[in-house]
Length: 210
Image 1 (cartoon, one colour):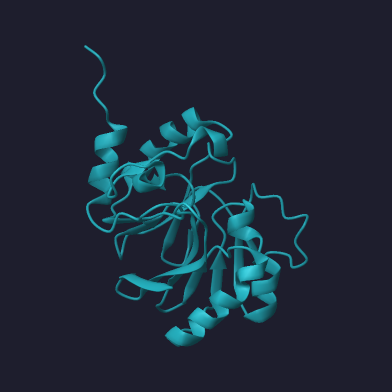
Image 2: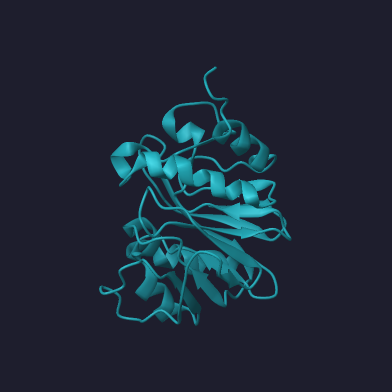
């Protein structure tokens, strides 16, 4: 399944699970067409089929963090598509056959994307923000609220069951408010296509008890 969630920005479903679970990657078309994350190795063909259907030739791959559903297909995708690869400095790449072309972290820019280190879910988790398009790719810094059984349209920290430090994950979200974006793209649950920064600010800037 392919959804164009913003002009030339595509949400590609690689796998669904019973109960609403969904694994996905994102493709940004533009001067340097860019994929975000890889899904699992066994679903690589779905990404290849999707980019062929879209008639977009990805040139760059950015990994947000090293969880299996985000990096497991790295080698298979690199073998199938000629890609410049970027992986966070904090990510363990010892299991990869193909060395990343570049490592990145907080404050680095990858083309139009600014890297924001947001640990908590995992120590290597990063968001990538394209302020020119007003879009933030959050990695697993946040989930769509509907993945936690709440109404869609909001962002929540990743659940403690899947996080190294959920308290750190929540506090890290404050860093995103330094950036200007309208849409927030998540890998679990529904993305927030409009007013995402304001929605996040209303969560993060919760008033202190009087």
